[in-house]
Image (cartoon, rainbow, N blue to C red; front, side, top):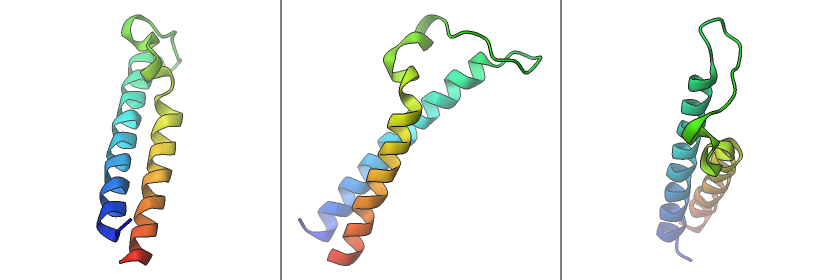
Length: 75
């Protein structure tokens, strides 16, 4: 694996992780009532990609940063 390949893989995984974190922030913002208490999920927010968005997002960022770290030492 070259440094360029590791860097591209890392950036791609980081972007996917960022998208999942954005989906999680959409879900949380829909759940917050004006009074500040959390309401139940409903509709599309019951889908797997909204429920697992936070762990997948943070894992994607962590793995992407790992690939970018490897690319620093390969280059």
